Length: 286
Ligand code: KIV
Image (tube, rainbow, N blue to C red; front, side):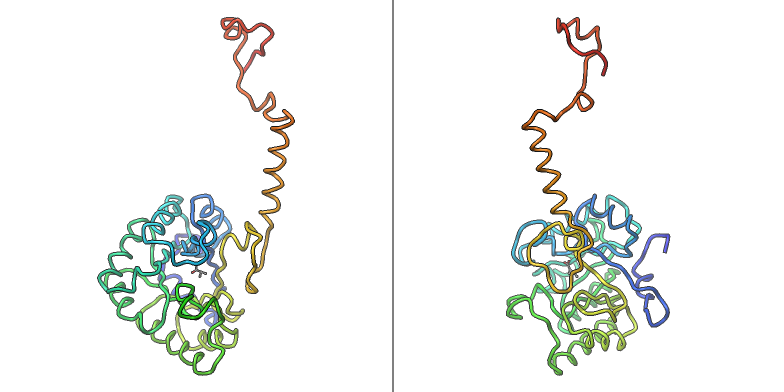
């Protein structure tokens, strides 16, 4: 795809129909969005993971609609080719249908081109209201981080037959309601494959094995920006923390030794200006 990616483009992207797997990455600011877009991702998710990887919280429950809107606006200002997915945070779609649509509208006005929300069949009234308001919706089932307390921790979901069947039913209900794609997080690969086979919209996996229609990872995990606990499902493609700390340490050493800034990194008066200031022996040029 060389032109702007839209939600209907993504909906049609099923690997069993011969499509290439979809690529989604998170980004939370303009430089990150430019990098993700330059790398050719299909979708940029302004995820509530911003809480953990940028804002320093231990879970995703702390971020608000205004927080996600702030980060979405930064991403949208870069006008990426990739579809911008705004993540509805915890409590923004749990109280009422009206609240849900108003909160989603805040993200759309900030520049999101669709929204994502967590949960299965119990979210159908909210999903239907969003679609009614012409807002494309991406579902998210399995290990849903906003349910961390209800799940008793960040635990793989769908290991029991009854849970796996419930996930398949959830996915079918979301697809039937009109979601254009579904994130499947933290489920055994066989269950993700059954879900992917059971629905006609693409599944985007994270910790859900290779048989989804696409994959999503968090920007900071892929680039190794943090060296804290690495979940099993993450593959690191760079070690920017090590490289970054080394670069910052060398800057500090150069400042302390007087090696920075050098002549080329300084502004200079020309000879006339130097003379006017009475600075004899000063450097000319600029
Ligand atoms: O917020 C996020 O980054 C997400 C992905 C893990 C799918 O929801």
